[in-house]
Length: 268
Picture 1 (spheres, helix red, strand yellow):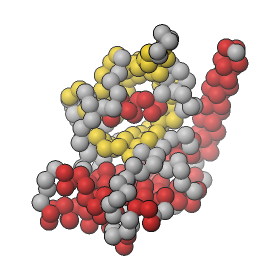
Picture 2 (cartoon, rainbow, N blue to C red; picture 1 turned 45 degrees about the horizontal axis):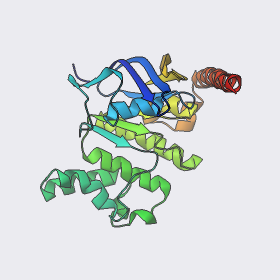
Picture 3 (tube, rainbow, N blue to C red; picture 1 turned 45 degrees about the vertical axis):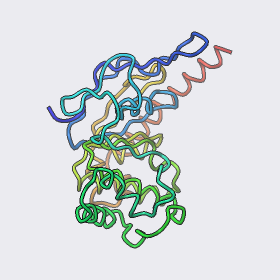
Picture 4 (tube, rainbow, N blue to C red; picture 1 turned 90 degrees about the vertical axis):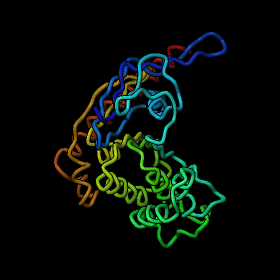
């Protein structure tokens, strides 16, 4: 079976003083090939830990992650990561950053150029290909990060708050670009965000996680990502069901935050 399967995943961090933190507990989720999923929840609910386990950066305490019928045991080219900060090579220009993965694979230059030119076009970077990374705005740097990730042709793209540091207008433009790239490439995308509106816009399925130990609290199947591919995202936000679902999830997360604060005060 193609796609990604998370089975009974748990993660415990043991501390030097003998205590431990149960970051995730018994998380199970199946993601079909080509789906785009957003993951949302209060701080400390294990969202990034979950993504790092899928990426192969962390080994879980229990359970497993399978992609295309094999168990994840470490990082691999089938999974691409886009971080909150672009994590770009500052000493390279835009084109060399995008070209890096195929170059490391030993791909012929003509093929590398074809891939890079296509990705520079669809991310709006063609006129900036010779620019140094430090000459670009935050939004443009995240475009480079997306293009570099896609150049490796991963099956699954993992995105950890990739738009969180952007201003509101740039963030909206980048949300539209993420949807465009998802639809054009057919990649499986898992996106972590703290923004309820962004989670609604960018998730065919939206997973709400509960606070520590992190676990799936509720799942939504939503129409807004498909609507947003060829529509103004502001119009999508005004479409039927968007405001009601946003308010429901906001209230849910607010209650979780109140619960976390209550635990903290009780422990003091």
